[in-house]
Length: 428
Image 1 (tube, rainbow, N blue to C red):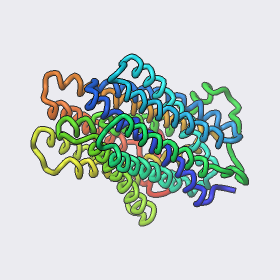
Image 2: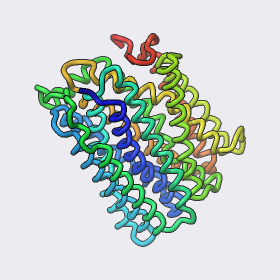
Image 3: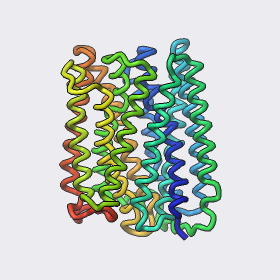
Image 4: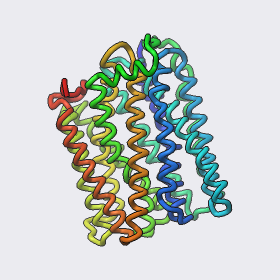
């Protein structure tokens, strides 16, 4: 038996809960450190980079999932660690004014826990989806669960932003406590008894972990897709840690308004993914090659407009531009996710979890590197440039990365691939 559509949606609720916690730590807490506590942007950048660096363990979590057994326990356990890390991270932020050393120490512990929780829960969830979803439903299942995660991010950012003003440490802790409690309860309800009656097709790999990982890296499809994920995710995440500080420093957004800005961006991602899903899967219009290229180039164009906004050349206000950026981000992301699910079972033996872990690790490394690079570049440029020009320079470089990702997509994605069977050009 395979997962039913209802069970796929249930697992999507776990992704939604995961995204709800992570968005608070990567956007709201980041803005509070930079604007309210006047800390250098590289500090939250390094902390988020730590949480992404910890996720280099994703291939190992996937390897463990490939051994079979109860994956639900890793999903729930990882979510519990993530929830505790999120709560501790929020508490640490409130301590920066009183004790920088204590706040930094607690933050390091918190963000390490966040990385472990996301790696264990997220990878185990994707491995469960890849090994128990019928082949013809895998791309659709990936799209559904990712859309639900984006919806959770957008909803949390919007609601949390409305309750954070006027800011106070007690109000911050209350909002975070409500979010992580709801996320944990949702995870327990969504995963309850879901593996019963399912035939889990994963088997214990006959080779040691490192040897199996080297064999997967030797597969041209898996290797080239890993490189594409790394490049495109660098472009995707470079603005993650600087967009809200940009809104606060250049446009005088309040903490609540800048959090709502993040919600608008992720709302745009949701609409972009939904649009491509309907067009490519439902109406069978356009190939993955077309959608991912359009998404990358569209993202580059909007980033150029956002950069100009900071210099006083405004083609539109910041909120609609950020929403449009999210829309184009969603375009290329949904094509990559569909490819990921279909390619997970393509290759030697059944190692869906290990492949998902490899691509998850590439995404995490790129996200951490891109976010930290963007934050550090802003700090350096602000020494000699006005705030608007400093942020604009980083947004322009990010746009160039999106153009490079589009060129790579044109080279490696099969131009004949459409809705259900994403592939890479053989031999590339």
